[in-house]
Length: 253
Ligand code: FPP
Image (cartoon, rainbow, N blue to C red; front, side, top):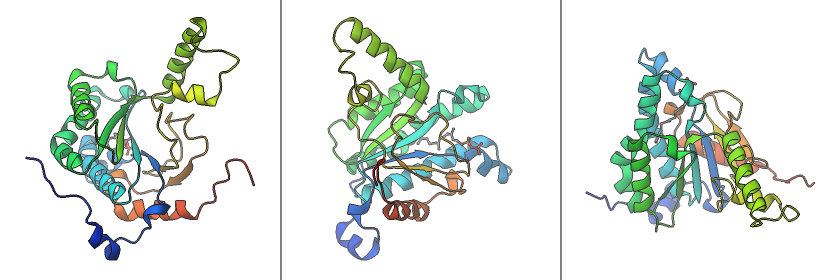
């Protein structure tokens, strides 16, 4: 049954929610790292960390909805993650279905629109179908855009874009002389979305791991040692607060 309770009550918010909505980034991208270590620290199998990670996703989605963030893009499964042991891959690829089974009604009540970026065709049918169902079901929502990066790799995305651009130039749909940054952006999975303003990476590593290389050109980065399953609204607001202090100059002075 669909829950009709919004994440956020605006009357209540005035007293209890401190961060000014207008200072929030429009688009936040997150590399959700540290699930395996979280589980191993507790003597649990690595996959227990991934399972715990889905409730963190929901906490962050709720916080983003409260702050009127326009888009949240989560690195859920990379093109390199296929190198992991098969049982772990299978487990991770079941999580979108599990997440949506648990939370889709609540996401719908809160006007969230689901999206996906990545090579969906090469995912198992159950993953693709669960995500596609959620995409179709939330198509007309105009609140938070929640994008799952699934079988996503930035280099793969750029090569795909280059091939499509080459074909369109050959077919004279695109002119080589006029090709500019806007055109390239149109050929990416993220076409039509604003570029991320803030990238958060949990789990202590400070690298991009083939995530949104083109789109992050002017994004502010925020790293934390906190492992993804332990990440909470507190750290999320801390990241937003630091983002608010940054001066974005886009190469100017
Ligand atoms: C990286 O941690 C995490 C992943 C590869 C999987 C991310 C998936 C989730 C957080 C589940 C959420 C999914 C949905 C669909 C809501 P790691 O395993 O590399 O951690 P480690 O660095 O400690 O080994």
